[in-house]
Length: 422
Image (cartoon, rainbow, N blue to C red; front, side, top):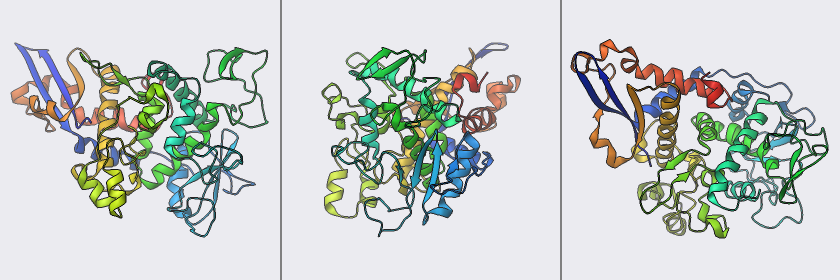
């Protein structure tokens, strides 16, 4: 996993200058956490009941919802997301059929708990779906190989953004017809019976459409997870930006690996799909110290110590087992979830900085542990006499660029990167 963000700085004043500096992941995660207090949130309209659910439209409503959720841990709370009603289950162990361990589990009122659904599928459990079940369901949309997963995941991320903004009714069961299909360039193309078909009129999404999972997934990623750990809010948004991007480059004996929903939400080798069974994108082992501190008994410790176990799961930091036990204070060395957050943050900052804030003078690189030694620790402000960077303000102001121009702006909007940095 990535552990730091490196900067290669090359410019000419009286002579050529070249420097390599890095910012540790723990510092970047502290900056991210500091920005969260500045993100505006507005409590959504509605009473939060099944007959009058909270209406979620836009980022400020979602922020208001997850900040409000801890006060409702012992209560039922209902949310209207793109016309679908999602319920938050209270932390009451006497409620049969639901996961009530922490008061943040989500379920789809119309679809969760459907009779006749096979075990391990997204709608089987009344108490909601696991990330593994989300990954399998989204994968079922026709993706046959990892290269197809890139394009498919980008379309799904686009659909998720539209849903979060409240700009589509695609997901309303039995209601308004689709006017904009976020998964195709034309609303006349629909995914029917496992194939894309041209139809005279767009149809309603039903429980078997892969996009049917998105309202529930949105509630999990952007209400439940930030309620448990506020850092999950920008992490989820960064994950959408990274869909289709490389997280592991091509080398002589290994193809490049890209962010997809399969790799984000679950270790692909656990998808029970032949084309993904050998995928080792996250077949690592959870750190022993993390497993030892979290496992409640020897059997659980043994299971969670295996490569690709549920303690590792996908690249999304909230996907592994025990992710809700991450610490509120930054302690990357001893917190596996924070290590995953750092890795995702570094890769996102590399993408966002180089595409929208870097230039031929300075570029960013997400660094693996073995690559850090080639760089010098960044101290703000730079030693300007040594580097001459007093004559180039951008490099001397990296802290502001990363915290304000990149992280804080990302945390305030559901826009894609291209729109966000227009």
